[in-house]
Length: 281
Image (cartoon, rainbow, N blue to C red; front, side, top):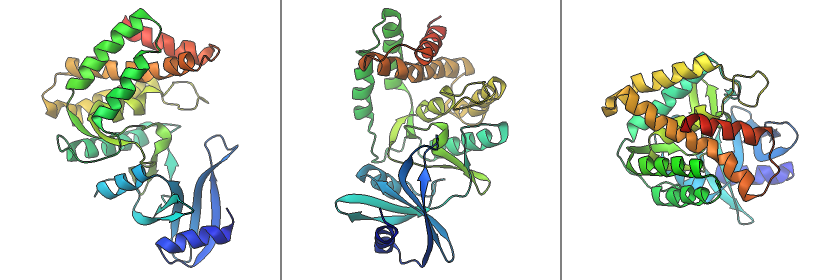
């Protein structure tokens, strides 16, 4: 879009004296998101092409660590939101300090909405449909058996608000705090959904997409228990059992993708297959 079009969209939401506009690149740096940094004479903002789900989630979540929301508008039947610009870094390259802040934010949201059902985009029933669909593409009896065990636990697990796609690039460290971003997939879901997805895909390999030392990951697992899960009257062993199943679910995501779309098996497929078997053993 041209800068004049972007200014027109922004000013339908909030009148600003815009002095600079910059489109944001993706994590690989080889393409652009439908996201723009808007610099005015006294502040910076993000304009983002959005969805009805994300707009509803912003309106539903109050007083939690997310970017300040200024509103939305439609332009040629497309939705755009204007939110606070957070000047910080994501957690693709994790360390103890920043990841601990991330877990503190997860805990804050978990506690605030524990057993308090609110209307959000990713409903429990909708998620169960998606989860059951994955079962059809595992193509392995051992994986299927463990996956059914996961589904059984998923149905019984205590619920709270969770970001349903909390990969490390969907959290920003800014203003000495961790903030959730990209709020299209938020739901009232089993409490482990957010924490498990956040830690599952980290690897102790420098240069990997999501890097975190295994020792720090183990620390975070204990930290999450000590600062939240213990209040649910679960033993550490019960917690580890449930967490292992939720991590197993995360690992099966790539098994599902490769099998459903008949992709050639490569290093990533076998990495996640081995992670699944580690849980089964």
